[in-house]
Length: 313
Length: 245
Image (cartoon, rainbow over all chains, first blue to last red; front, top):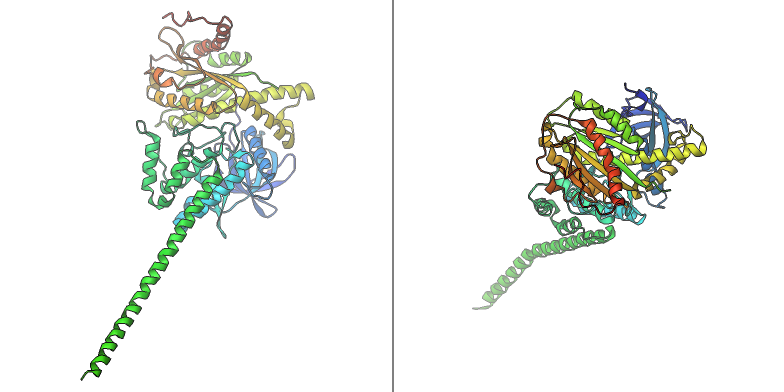
């Protein structure tokens, strides 16, 4: 005989207009729509006092509490916005009588990284990579590894374009084992490193994030082909990333020990390109100036000859 | 606080037991002995509905104090590691709840605390999950229908050992399959801290049509204590029971 109280707690689906009122803080949120679903629970866009907020609810109470702890820890990193800011933590008694834990965070609006690059062009690649590495460096310095870094977890806010990291479900203290990951972005999956939380784990994922922009349907590891070779091939074919190839390759091989190191190289690359571009522009301008000089000197010589011919009898 | 060694049985199956005692009963017995039983039901890629047989999966895990999940084989790697970790957290939370009850009275549990305090306790649980030692007996269903899934199972187990070995705490794994050729279970890989050697020992394991889940669970339950015995009596080169066939 099944004893229903010991049965697994079922995942819950909130519907539009549903009201979620907290058991401890009595705040009431009205669901607008679901905006995301992950391994742990779903995220809903809700209204609270007339402003939009994001509410995450899960049947796994422990996982919710762990994420809240991470968000709280990130809040303490002064003067820098890492991840969404936490607004409320509470429990909700569902109509089915079960109690679900949830937390509320700021609602961030923006495009995914892939969509942004497609709309605004590859010239943004370097800038956004620098921003991402800057954020990761701050996070690493605070003692955390982001963990589940993937294209879906990176949002670009517009005006001015700014990278924001969302979903701290995989965020793990340095030196521990990565809590949550997505295979394509996980160096363990590719057999190119451990799942220990350290800066190089995130930096591998950074390289995969940028590859993912050019392989939106992703690709899988292959039996018989070493992953290093496969990734190299894929990298080679993503010609838009050409300038960043040496840097991405190093990240995939785990050659960077800090995000700052990688960031510096990306910035050097950007400067190098700009310098080359301005030199190129100068050259073009010089070339443009030539025809005027040329015709001028030709006509000068011609007129000299003409005058000489006049002087001759 | 020291949680000591966490003991888990991870059962991987694609169907219903059809021989011997009720696996849920055995799982509950194992749980009473401090062993957590997790179950993963593997679906065929073309299966759209949850087959009857897999209903048992949840029952076994619930009575075994563990976690269950039904997945397509392509999602197996991620699921195996998630289930194992979730079960570790669940077990540790159980310990913590017991402590809370002894301090604060019998109606107290983590869920009853306000989110603030719960957060603090969860930090302790997480620390324990990272640092405690873990022993997992993997029990793989090797009945005929599993033939096409064994390659994926192998990958998933390899992946699991990689994930867990990134932890601070120590791990030990061993793998059994069921049914064995002569008995309910058969050793595939003896206790080892890593599953690197798994490629060699994971041959075409399939056997007949019977699925004695209950008896197999009962048999692996004793593998934990047996190891302890073996360790106590120091070096005993051969295990009589397993060299018997």
